[in-house]
Length: 226
Image 1: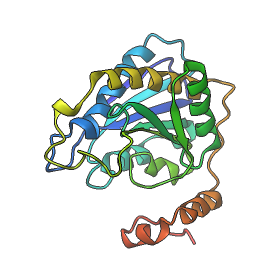
Image 2 (image 1 turned 90 degrees about the vertical axis):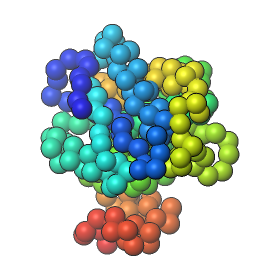
Image 3 (image 1 turned 60 degrees about the horizontal axis):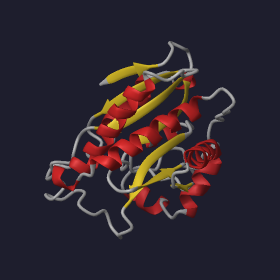
Image 4 (image 1 turned 180 degrees about the vertical axis):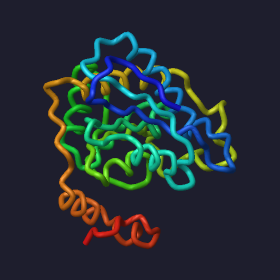
C-alpha cells in the first residue's frame, strides 16, 4: 500500500512499516503500533514543506521473510532513493531507539533530531538483517529502523497470543509519530548527504556483531559476500 507526501521529485525517501503480524498474534504491538506511527507521521508530513518526496509504504509478509520489502526493493529505482526509514518497533514502549545500520548519515539524523526536539533517542549503529530495511541496506541504501525500549530483556509480548490492543499506550504512538516525521524531514534535508553504504564495511560490521554464522545458516548471507 503506497501513499505519497511532499513534492514529486526524482529523489525520494521511503517511509516503511509492515502490517502483517505473527501467525499466532493479533499483532497490536508488532507491528500495529508501527503502522499507526507511520500513518500518523504521514498525516504530519503532508503539511510539511519537504524538499523531496516521501513514499509512505505499508508492506506485507515481513514475518515470513521480508517478502513485501523484497518486492519493493526490486521494483523501485534505488538510484532515486536517498534513504529508508523503517518503523518496526516504534510506538510500543516509551523511549525511541534508532538503529542506523552502519550508516553515519542515519545515525547523525537521529542524533540531530534528539537534540533539537529535546527527546531521548538511543542510537545504535549495528546492522542486522531482521526487518524490512534489510533488502535496501544490503544493496547499499542508508536506513534507519525505528524501535523502542521497554527496559526489560527479551521481546516482551511480541510473537505471543498476548500481543493485543490493551498493551498499547496511545501516547507512545503519538509521540513517536511526531519524532518519525521530524526524522524523515531531517533525512530529506538537502544539506544531508547520504552516501551509499560500502559493502566491505557492512560485511565487517555484520561480522563484528557475530551475525555471519546465523545468517549463513538461515540462507540470509548474500551470494558473493566473502
